[in-house]
Image 1 (cartoon, rainbow, N blue to C red):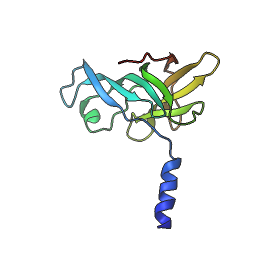
Image 2: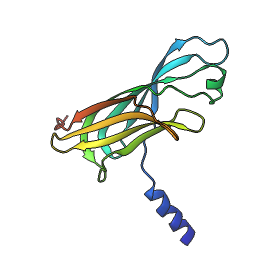
Image 3: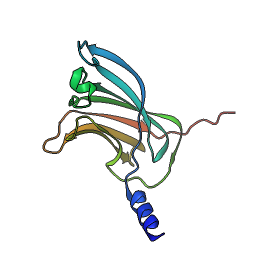
Amino acid sequence: MPVARGLLGVLLMLPLVAVAEQIGEVSTVFKWVGPNDKIVVEAFDDPKVEGVTCYLSRAKTGGLSGGLGLAEDRAEASIACRQVGPIRFRSELRAGEEVFRERTSLVFKTMQVVRFFDEKRNALVYLVYSDRVIEGSPHNAVTAIPILPWPDRP
């Protein structure tokens, strides 16, 4: 039983990261072998802020290496987050907290979304960027949501 409690404690300390749902995709480059290069649109809900959904568009490399999961996707991405219901904080927010992460190469590269709370303007700010073990990318995109009252619906 002490091992189970220790494992549970470790799991509770891990960051809560959202899982994306693919909304759609468009093909950008035809490939003779393997899937085409494409732009995918994904949605994820902020795991710590009820009432917020983010939409992320990003390039996905196709071809034989892309089909096998060996290709490195481009660093560019776009993000738009929206209030989709009453905003409620499920737990305390930390500045720069990671809310989404996706691997964009076999080992070394990830795309991440982090959240900031702009207390002065009462807004949530989301930043998407890509990083590598050795060198990241300056390509990024940002979106902000003013925290507004949500109308009651019958």
